[in-house]
Image (cartoon, rainbow, N blue to C red; front, side, top):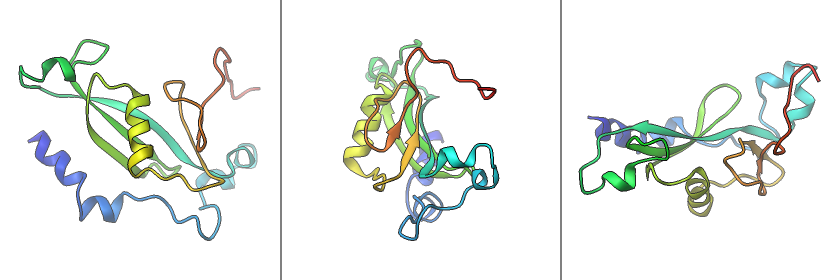
Amino acid sequence: YFKHILGALSSPPFHTEYVYFPDTSQGVPSSPLDQNPKLGRFFHGCLGAIDGSHIHLSARALNQEAFQNQKGFTSQNCLFVCDFDMQFIYTLTGWEGSASDVQVSDAALAKDLKIPNSYYLLADLGFPHQEGILVPYQNKYYHLAE
């Protein structure tokens, strides 16, 4: 059943109606952070956050090794982008658990993940710093009190 549900959520009409990038032709889309005087100014041009997630699955014995991730269980590596309203604006599913976040994001950027110029997504250190994706500095710890 998992495969059928994932297929339905990743295909039209559901995917094209509910999962899409915001229209940036009229400027920066509004977000809840716009109303926050302390944080809003730091996120101008940010469309949301990107991350990979491993979803447990049962793989056939033939594919078991490809779907085994670095933590030792079989999974599918999926890539998600959420905006500040906690809405999915991009999904990519179907990658083997052995694939890294970098491999999956590179494939998404080559395929159909198009981040408009002058905009960016926040990511963790599992992603490379590249145009359109902002990752934190390594070995730097961030605190809201700073």
